[in-house]
Amino acid sequence: MPVIKDVVMQTLKCISPIDGSVYAERAVLSLAEAQAVAARARAAQAAWAARPLAERIALVMAGVAAVGAMNDEIVPELAHMMGRPVRYGGEFRGFDERASHMAEIAEGALADIAVGEDATFKRYIKRIPQGVILVVAPWNYPYMTAINTVAPALIAGNTVLLKHSTQTLLVGERMARAFQAAGVPQDVFQNVFLDHDTTSALIAGGAFNFINFTGSVGAGRAIERAAAGTFTGLGLELGGKDPGYVMEDADLDAAVATLIDGAMFNSGQCCCGIERIYVHQSLFDAFVAKSVALVQGYKLGNPFDPETTLGPMANIRFAAEVRAQVAEALAMGATAHIPTFPEDDGAAYLSPQILTNVSHKMRVMRDESFGPVVGIMPVASDDEAIALMNDSEFGLTASLWTPDVARAQAVGDRIETGTVFLNRADYLDPGLCWTGCKNTGRGGGLSVIGYHNLTRPKSYHLKKVTK
Image (cartoon, rainbow, N blue to C red; front, side, top):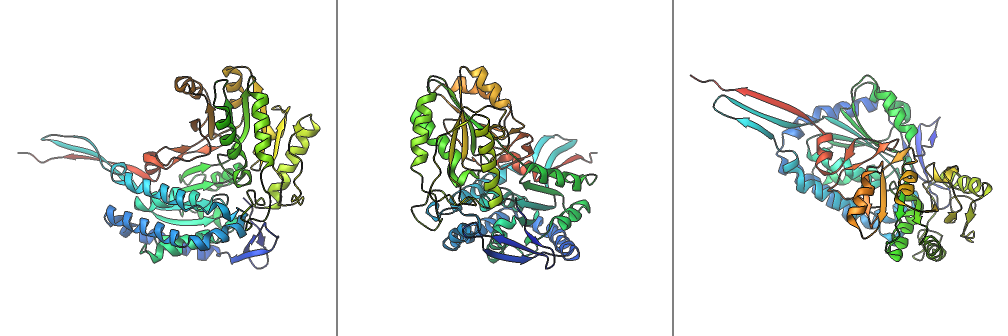
């Protein structure tokens, strides 16, 4: 995720992809100021954890509602900051769904685990809050990705520092303001503006008990290096190259509609977006033809135009990487099916693209693209599709298409991935653990497991006094 910092003024600048202007600017905290913020969070944590669970839940959900009340301001603000078309209405539905689910399961997820009690002993395991949580959130779905950790962390009794991406500089500020207005104490949930050096110094100094980070593989490694020797818990969601596999008995129209939307929505800037598709050879030509027709109907343009379905990419640098991958693939023999859109300016406004005659020798089928491009390959069997899906350094989700649930389960068991979808894609179910494998990262958010990662077990072995 881009961090654009003025070295002299020590400020973070959000550059709008709409026109390249500076949309927002904030001063970073000095190391001493950041240490003081972290110290206030630590001092406030015990009192927050001592509040009844029902009270913490009510305050968090009031904060969620306060964010929802800002949605008319948030939607255009997001368009300015990261280019998403206003026609899609923001993120509040998913934001609320995830927080609400975590609130609903909190009592059971955080309940003591009874091990046994008799006349002599009482034994149980408690879930104890980790302490101070640092959430480093990305720009592509800035509210939904942040709430994945913020809501359960606060509900579990932790205090939270939220460091948001510079590309969506105002999101953390809005969230903290909303939650504090709803009654969450100021030191319990704080937004912070930090540069890389200060963030690393805080981590290395043991300021946090747990860190949740969503971003690039390189940045995830930097966090691991900073945390080395501190024994700080880490949850890392890093790169992805999520595959779709369309079997010979799939609902072709549904597969095209869902997988292509999964590849192109939000200009392809989705953590679990579809980046490569494998189609049984009997359906391959029809799948490609229908996909091309669908994408040719898209409208690239200013995100404030209600007709726009594809806005600019969030940063010129991201668009340049996609263009480079496509150009390299074409030079290696790939076929492009989408002519350049008139609105493509060679900068942030990028035409969508569908490629065939691709192979895993091409970066567009190996490296994370994070843009509106997808490569499609024919396959002859499940074994071939599984081998290709697993031929990746990443493993976040995989989308399978067949009416045969048992077959999908058998294929899914052989895929190296965090989530297996059947007849759907690009969705985060808060009842399931959001997790990945390989270079996609480690740990897991949401679900009961999300609570387990934001707490630590504490065992009680109590011997009763008997006469």
